[in-house]
Image 1: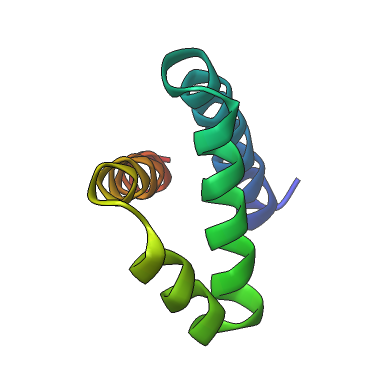
Image 2: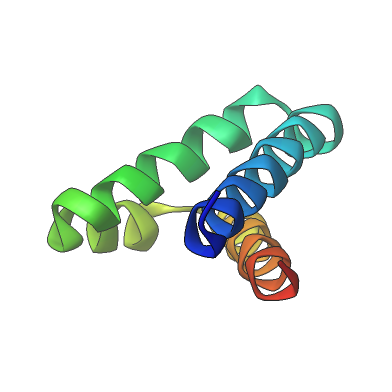
Length: 77
């Protein structure tokens, strides 16, 4: 298997593990919010900005931590 495919698989696996951890520690609602933002960033950045701007400060902090953790994991991979 080419190295790039292995890396993508590893990152996907780490993302799945992070998702399960978020649900266990923060609840399904946070994971759903992360997924909404992730999809919006990919498809409509203005919508993503609106979602983030509308988030309560505590929710925004949790979202930022979730994305920060994901990017740290991806960099480790």
